[in-house]
Length: 152
Length: 396
Ligand code: FES
Ligand SMILES: [Fe+2]
Image (tube, rainbow over all chains, first blue to last red; front, side):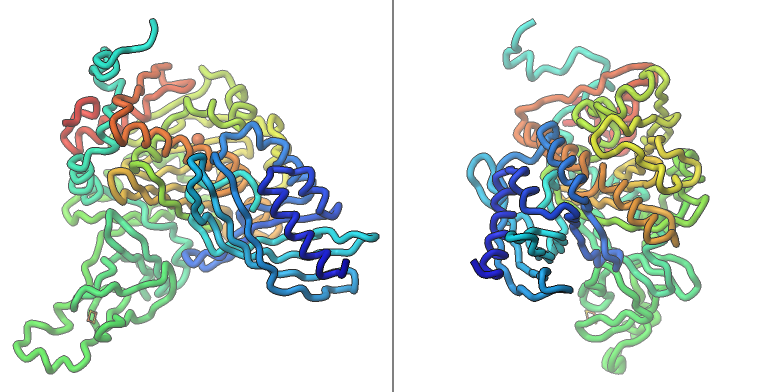
């Protein structure tokens, strides 16, 4: 598989894993020093905001606690379109920018757009595999209704 | 006792009048109009925090009861508020939620205004031959604005008593926290909720629901004896924590040590939880290192605009700010552990009352102003009833 194909598959799997609440599979796609953050520009404050930030352990802890939380019912579907894949700081690193749309389908089967934004990912090649090293989600959507407990 | 039949379900509860609220207060269009006329047109409400207008000519646009307003800091450093409406033909003057405008130019026919609301220019003014239209009398409609502890409040009623008499002593326990060091808003988000505005405000007045939040079940419910908790209510429908509640953060995965790495806000310890609800729809909630401020604005009987702010210390290092953001996001914001749960609750109850499946809500907990007493809810509804001249338990 070419690097680009492997990266496309990695990004696609990261969405499916979260959609399916298969958190072990998601973490399996992440490097050991993985970091995740959701950034949002506030035109009200004229400032960048961080709405969620975790390292790999933090993500694992968050996933562990999810079943105990009162959550939005239904399912999320993350639709990704990879825009660019560029070589990063080294030949083993890639900077990948994707557009992402997240839909929510409620228990009655009705679907609505929940959020649009981008994934700004750093992907590294380690051994024979490619792994997510960082994921920064930048959101255009700032009204997420009742919000959510899971990462996007 | 088993299930109830229709008449038992629908009958007025056999309880003191202040112990229940009719579901109609969340859905009846006439009541909603009364709230607009008698509460939101008359009472002081939060516009923004001073730090949102740090420089001269900085402005913030916001909605209030169906109208667009903006607050702007003048050259004289005074924050004033105006209806966001051009005197000429009513175009909306400011479109962006925030910005800096030394002069405000209406996009439509290019009339201009200054930061004190004066009309400064009318293109080809000579065309108004009669003389009744001239810039001297075409200023903006000013809305009363007062700042208390860094919070800018506005009031649509030119004849209402001043802010101080509305708030009374309700913010005294917050004065050190809000003014001991300059604060800054670092988080802001809005959500349009499918519920009446009061259903959201109730989530901030009701401590009994801490059982809903796994975080609070594990960090707060047992952190101190229930009887040592203190509740306080004030004239005017405000109420909050009398003494601070405590949190034992190591009860929840990932929260242990919260607050060891950044100074708490002035007058707080990292494990303190302090809150006050201001009538009609503002809540100030501090968890040691950060403070959240909610404002909920009615959009319709079953729609409300919620604005949430998170504040930390102004001028702190990036490292400290990052930690404070983390503390904020642990509980609050769209990805917080608690806030989405509160929103589920508010919308869920609204759903039941919308079509009168639910008839009454019970606010009868009496724990002598401790534990999970409903006194704040009762104080709120007493003021609400007084303002709209209706009995909350039998409002129509
Ligand atoms: S409506 Fe503003 S200048 Fe005409
Ligand atoms: Fe809550």
